[in-house]
Amino acid sequence: MSVQTVIQVMNQMKQLHESLVALSKSKTDALKSNDTSGLQQLLTNERKHVQAINKMEKKRVEAVTHWYQVNGMNPSEPTISEMLSHLEGGDHEELNAAYNELIIVLAELKQQELLNAELTKQSLQFVNLSLDMLQPSLNSVNYGGKEEQQHKPKRSVFDSKA
Image (cartoon, rainbow, N blue to C red; front, side, top):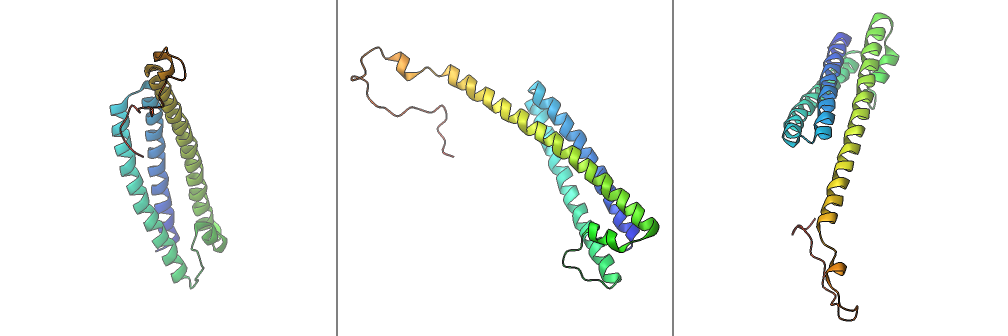
């Protein structure tokens, strides 16, 4: 496998990550509009993308490892950045461009997923607040003195253990 194989795999990984960014943006819209069924479908598609990315990552590792073996090198960790230090000319430029493009897409994906995590957190806080408002306070139900109150454990809305 040549450097071109590694570059092709990197470009395929970039395309998959760009598609994942588009899914993540759709997920943001679904979170904003409270579309749970659409969100479920997006999460299913996201899992498929992640599986495809994992396969491409394995191909990338194999291609980089094979390149090191062909060139008689045996580094402790065969990485793209280490590989770049051994390349010159057009191959170096192409691989460096593919590497940098992938890093940019990964940074965009990370930012989008942080936004989605924050939106999800806020949604959960709103749900918890709504549940707290719907449950009557046990102190306001009883009109007797404090000495008459029995200490009963508060009942949860859900009967589940974490």
